[in-house]
Amino acid sequence: MRLSWIVAAWGAFMLAEPVARAESSGPAAAPDAARAADLEGRTTRARKQLGAKAPVVVVDDAFVIAAPPGHDAALRSSVAFTRDVLAALVNGRFRSLPKAPVSVMLFFDRDRYEAYCKSALGEACISRFGFFRPDLRAIIMNAGPGLGTLSHELVHPLYELDFKDGPTWLNEGIASLYEAPALAKRGEIRGVTNWRHPRLAAALRSKTEREHARLDVLFGMSDDTFRGDREDLNYALARYACQWLESQGKLWEFYARYRDGFAADKTGEKAFREVVGKTPKESHGDFSEVGAGPQALVTPSDRVCRDGACL
Image (cartoon, rainbow, N blue to C red; front, side, top):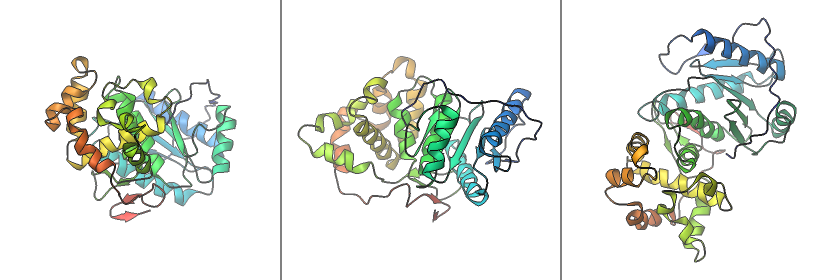
């Protein structure tokens, strides 16, 4: 999601209150003193902002997940979903969870979500679904439409740590891929076709836009260009480039080669060619056949899957 860099009022009041219970998606080392203090501070701030009875859960000593009072059951479902997503994201994908804790503020109706942005951040929410603020290390989310935005935003702090200088198109491509996740078993995740597909399909069929919907335009695309006038198309193109690679079992091999060889391969074309066997330009025909074709559309709100069940 687009980031906002306006300085926010993120009040910090350290009250004598224990850290919320912790839940883990796998073995984790005990937090050091600085991290423990950060976790406690984030727990305290969440209850200061949402109410003393707000449910708060710490997951993997990395994410402090909070919701307004009265949403305990919804928070439990969100925590279980978060644990499954994180277990998959660090299973042969990203190398580790964030070193610095991240707050996750969940709201289950748009009015409360919008009110929180204005009161805590001093500005309107920058997306109707949710967003990650790296300057605050916070995910703020309207969970009313479903949990797809949560799995999207969880990618960003992991990518930020794992591929610090990586391009925005790949960051948002992977995040958007998993905003419609299928989690068939523990440690596995894949993206299913979602609401972004019609934008790409229309562009690929358009005489005026098809050149902007080519697979190869991603490679070397600047962050400013990604966020420019065709941002919606760029999101769709990046997402389906990632889904196309994932469908062949090549996404994460490409990602690792690109990340590890970034100093000598700024565009990612070399890594792509090594993994796919062809250049992005040579692969566009195969990609466009899939990208422009009719597909069953699945939105985050009506299919967020975990252990074979869809929430």
